[in-house]
Image (cartoon, rainbow, N blue to C red; front, side, top):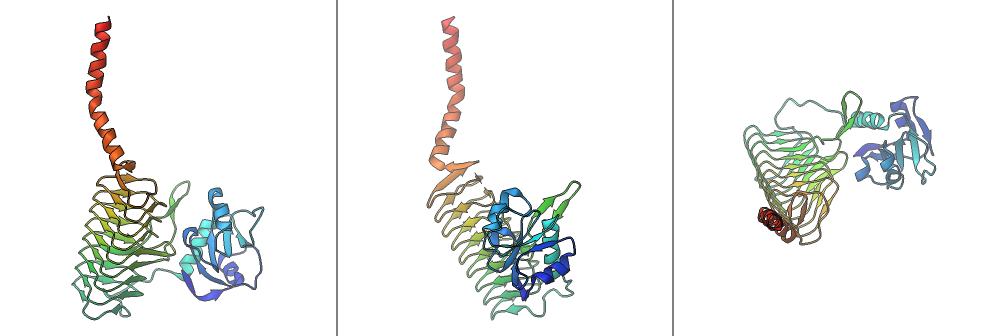
Length: 318
């Protein structure tokens, strides 16, 4: 998320309170806030797990909220606090707070020529819908969503809901507030009862020409390329990259932080936990090359006969 106007380190310190120690030049400016997976130069981000300290400190972000002073700050300005997650969320809530809406269509919505919104559609703040789109009844389009031309969205789908991102506490789960956006490209069709979460702080992206069946979940900050087809009841986790011209059949699950390479086909009911190679065909859970998986399945079907033969051989040896 880019701030409406740049902030100084003193602005952040005034917001967070006296418990925060600042290490760095106070004459620099902070232009945005982003979760670690989407940072840019000028951003402030946070890290609260040793696994990600080095990644954060070597990232593009210029300002890091963290819970200890590192041996090497790699030239970053640091906000030292006992709870980086809490203080990051405090900044997000300050600059992207929830604003209730008393109308179905926000009055500032940009709607292109020839676009039809059926009864019951909800459209939030900072939304742009292109030309010749059809948005069917009871679709909800949340704040900070861009929809390009010739898009069809079927009933009861939710575009731009909050990211599913929580931190475990001793007695509860703390939510990482969402401040990102959602982008839907040209000539996209989204089936009924689909959900596409906006980015935590960056963008969830659905490229031109994609076709989604019904009942599909797409997680935060996932980027899907052009002309990708996804079958019903598929679940795609956050921060996944799906490159152009992939084919994902029904009831496929894809784990977070992986890349589905260009031209990949994933056969129905598969569970994918590793990145694929270009033009690969995957099947199974965990998904592997479909020919290898089918050979495995054929071998498994032979096991009862093999076991019977072994029992018979053993009886003859007595």
